[in-house]
Structures are given as C-alpha cells and as structure tokens.
View 1: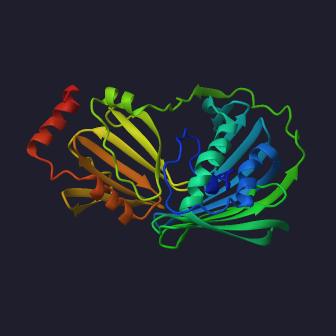
View 2: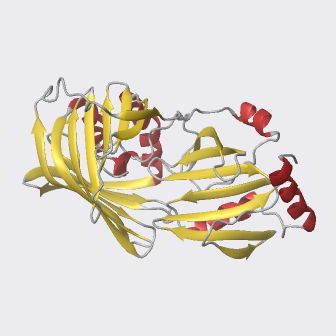
View 3: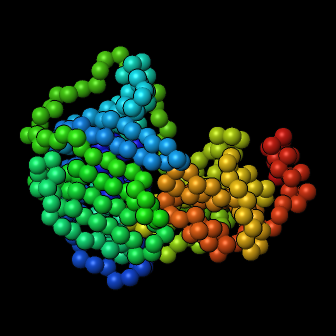
Length: 361
C-alpha cells in the first residue's frame, strides 16, 4: 500500500524485525540530514493532506486517491480509493493497534502495531545499508509552495530501482516520491495534492467508528534458522543474493494452496527488498504466466510482475521462489549461483503426487 505513505518510498518494507549489518558494498558516504529528518517525521510532525498514487504495472495504469491524517504519537488515519471503484479502504493506527476496514460494510481486521519500531530499525540498520549501496545527492527546490530538499537515490549496482523524493523542510514529510525501475522507467509516482502542517494534538480524542466487525489478523513472527530446520526437516538452502543485500529475518508461513509449511526470508540493501519463499520438495511449481529458461544445471522459471521480477527453481530438496524489484537478469544469476536442480524425474512427480494425496514424503 502506497498511501501515507510516500514515506514508504524511503523506508521500504520496514514492518519487519532486522538483524545487524554484515559488510559493505563500498565505503559509506556521510548521512544526509534530509533523510534523517524524513525518518523522524512520523514521531515529530502532525499533518493532514490528500494524495494521489499512480503505478504503471503490467502494461496498465493504476490510480489511487487518498486522505491522510497524522497526529503523533497515537493517531494515523489513511483512507484510499482506487479510481474507477466505489469502494474505499481505511487504515487506522491508534496507539499499539492497527485496524483495517471497509467503511461501506464495517468489516475488517485488527492487529498489534508498534509505531516506533520501524523508525528505530531504519535509522540503526537500513540507513547504513542504504548509504553503502546507493549514491545520494540533494538539491533545494519548492513544491506545493513549500521549501523542500529534493533527494535522488541512485543504486551503485544498476540492477535495482532508483528513488527521487521531495522532503518538506519544515515537517520532514515526503511530499512527492518517484520510483524508477532498473531500466530507467518511472513505475510509481506518489504525490500530495494538498498538505497542511497541523498542531500536535489536533486529533486528540479521535476514535474508530462504532459497529466495526473486526477479525484478529494473524501476527507474523520471526523464526530462527535452527527452529526452521526442526520444523521443516532440513537445513534451509543458503541463497547467493545480489551484492549489498543482507538477510533480515525468517518467517514461517503456510502455503494457501496446499497448507504446507514454507520459510519466508526477507533480504534488504537498505531500500530495496527481496523475498525468498522456500518449501520442501523436488518438483517445481511454476507460477502462472511464467516461462522456462535453461541455465547451468537445470531449468528456472521467470516472470515479470509489475515493477518486480520473479524466479522459481528447485535445488537440494527445496522449491524456491525469489521476488523483488531488481532486474530479471539479476534474479536469474541468484538461482544460477545458488544451484539449480536438473529436469524433474518421474520419481519426483510420483513423490509430489503422494505428498499431495497422503501428506508424506
């Protein structure tokens, strides 16, 4: 979700628990003050405004309109509506709870939310990685009649996106952000159409509407590699990710198609995120719309999905899928460096059938 949220262009996927950095792509540059200001803005600045988010994905254009209200530390409300749809969606973060609901039906979900964690994690972990993996330049400009720092974030390795963001000097809020894919194409634009700094406490006493029907949303929890090995019955494959990416966290999830346990691993270079899904098995299950590509060792399946790329393959008793906003060529190289199993054998097909039928193997 891009709403609120131009800030997400800087923070990336930050609702995750992170490990410590382990190495550098090159000598880190000085920490730009506008980036720190933007990270600290949620805890320091109250504001409201209207946004438009435009994404160019899969040959189509998606446009979403949004309203944002923020009063730190306890209140954030985001309401967004896709253009062409009569349905809106609302996210409210109130204290330590996040609620998402459809205002037309009152149905939605509720889950714990710790507002301060994302900012601390970004400042201590992701920002140093970002400074190692991206070149950052800043110029002064104006936007919406306000003084801004225009920040250009360009990758050292050109297999991942660049970002261009306008940071309001007074509040630190990102008023405009552009995401540019590795081929140099603009793939997402998030812009405030109106923006107003508000006094702290302006939404004090605000509450959720009455009569909402909220289900508890499952909380995704991290798992250690040791526990994952015990739960899945094998040591997870060590995937050779692109330079500058670090393993952030592992999660245990369950495949919605067959109910089997999967290990989800998040990698970050400070701005761009990769996700690896690993499931025990020897028979690849290519995602719909993918095409096969032969590499050294065996076949992989590849697909573009909007601004992201996907590669799917099997290796050493695992079926692996990696997806992220890097070039397709870079993900194919990940599979090739890690290792790719040969063309599935008849025995692999039989074992997969028995697994689905009886739940063993």
